[in-house]
Image 1 (cartoon, one colour):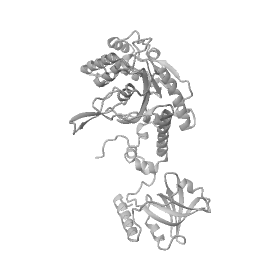
Image 2 (tube, rainbow, N blue to C red; image 1 turned 135 degrees about the vertical axis):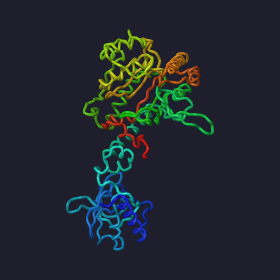
Image 3 (cartoon, one colour; image 1 turned 180 degrees about the vertical axis):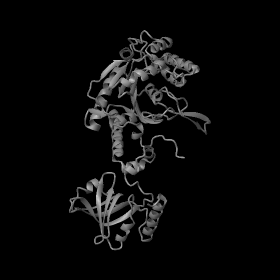
Image 4 (tube, rainbow, N blue to C red; image 1 turned 90 degrees about the vertical axis):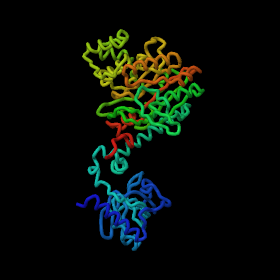
Length: 484
């Protein structure tokens, strides 16, 4: 069997022979090209199609070629008595993977297969590197992620996943636009990172001789716009977090965040239910979804439970009675729940670690988890009925957080105090904390109206809608260790 080097050499040789015969290997544009899906409906008509050769059969005076473009596939028939005498010999120098254009009549073969009887063809791009023989020749998972361009050519399921992703993004933009929101852009390079509790990436700006962070969230800048007089804003864009990678996390991810003045988180729960129920039905045609063998219904209304209820139900711990770090550690120890990470410091971080370890894996959803302790939400307004709780909710589905939402804290003194507490915990060794942003405090001092908002990860949502177990399956080019 020829080696890859030999196969590439043979293709280059054929490329040069075609060029010598007057057929350049890298042609120009195609005049009056029709999508293959349209050409298939034009039996008896002459069409011009273009695409990649995905299969070749036959020899001698008749060759069958499977031609594929973005819209579909059709069989081309190259016959010695139909093609110009000077052109037919060039057919033998074509390979699977080559990109060609061809004109001819659409007809059905004696076997009933819709085909194009080619009257002429031209080479648009010579593929000098052979495609794997089949999907089974390209099944290494990391290779698929690394060479997504080949994965998309050979794996129809991969293309369908990314079609769903495109439809999700299109729907969400349209939905927010139709509800009076304005799409805006905020900085990716930020002198202070904020809006979430996460580790940032850092870079250096040479002209300013200043370190900048890649944003971990859009939140603080979007809320500055609320201060500036906007009442409904959203942004769809990339955020970056310099943290561990697993099946549900990629360091670069797409998020939609929005903020809405003069409403509260209760309004947002209703808005979220309606939006996601409509999205799922429009994108998938149903409100019932199967994800990794379990069934989920997006038919509204959805279940709602408080954070306190979950601790009572699953751990028999009442967080209203256990409201500081030492007593919580004692209560968890009695339940044989050990948090071994020494960087988990403070009441909020310990609560979150216990929730993620002992409660969240049991939750199915769609479920709204409401009224988190304020220690978990440094940017959230306190509940008017219980100042120890944040006016907040999370949307949980399949054991994963999809949405984090709350009434936005607009008291500058309370905001400063919470950030200062995070700074004290950081001095004790807390690894993930929010930085004190003096300019944001100054913005709040000018006055921000009552506002609520949330963010949703597009990648994780697409995972769920396409039944994919790994986030890398829904990101065109996921983060990978560089090839050596």
